[in-house]
Image (cartoon, rainbow, N blue to C red):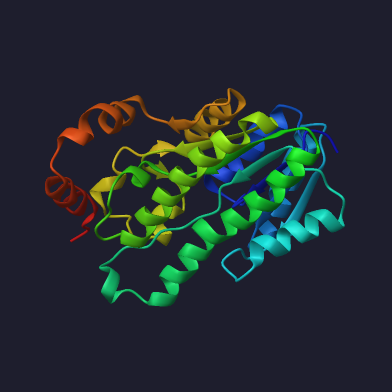
Length: 258
């Protein structure tokens, strides 16, 4: 296999589009998700269209130690990963105290713990093999507190901070780490999070647009990719001037669905 990319959450949305982009760039793929039939369909599409190889792994990364188990599987098969796309993740709407705690714990497991486990294992492999590139799908939510999605916003704040720190640590080892921070995106995330009626997702960008922005940023070794120019201006030049209590009220109002 050649220029091998491991993509989590590859069955739909941004992950699926990242797979298409990497295949178009003549890279082989390892696709990971829970829905095997969707992975198989994508595998058939990409192998029929491009001269590449695709392996699919049915894996539930919301389960404990799942990231480490996936790393062990990669090692057992003697696969050397050149690109890691930590893309899998989900959110959930509602007041924190009224949500089922298990849902939020699984969110932390997938959005944070599995990402950390995979990054640790694959980054060490990349160092041994001379280098590599990592793209972590974060969110512009990572720069804000998120009433009505408190846990989700907090997980993405972790990913933004974690990615930047690793970028600095790994630069001398020829491994780059980029945080993709999109605004609202037209994916299954909206329905899974129960936010199809939220004003937050009006005018959401396509998964294809977002994946292209992230992929190009990774290839150019960028630290952070805020995929929309207007959000980049808001976060980097305007948000810090707004009192925190007002920011909290604004985010809550945008997210509320009734």
